[in-house]
Image (cartoon, rainbow, N blue to C red):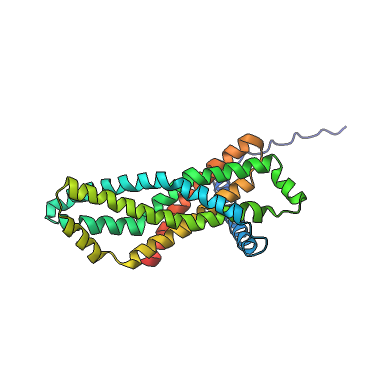
Length: 271
């Protein structure tokens, strides 16, 4: 008669091993998501130059992303310019350099704040709607229905949304610049007593077309990144209503982080 030796229980991984595992899994997820976004971007570019050109869908998304965001971008730009002019004038008063309020606000808006804030407003308003709409279509099998009708979902659903983000965020960035400088002018001239001629002449002296171009290029990059991320998360959502909500949350966080990361990278390249 043979006796069986009891098997030893499996040893649970230690805290260090669990931490390394979680870090590795998170890194794999990030690389996988980034690869999926790049692949989707290439598909969008490929289908954007192929017939049929769905101009009705494109103009509908241009209206939704751009025209629909005019109010929130204008309001944000006005108060951003007003607050920034107020704070910079307080600092410049210590050095008797109030004449530099105009160019300081102009350079900060055109190079950095206008593109970043415009992209964030589009992310919160239009990006979340894109992700939710596409996610709902995915979990309710509407995307599969398009494929059964021989309609490519990338061309029909994604191309108009991505192009709308690419074209309209720079336009909203220019609107932000205009409203921000208007708000700064009201505060500096009307509230702080700075000479209108000094405000305008110093701004013209220091602000160059390259500064405006830098902000517009950033807006285009941010708009492309945000629209791709939101479309990718929504297009690949799963798990019903809960999955759509989770995909939208992930899209908002990833879009905001991508804006700041890309802003730093572009800032280094333009420095």
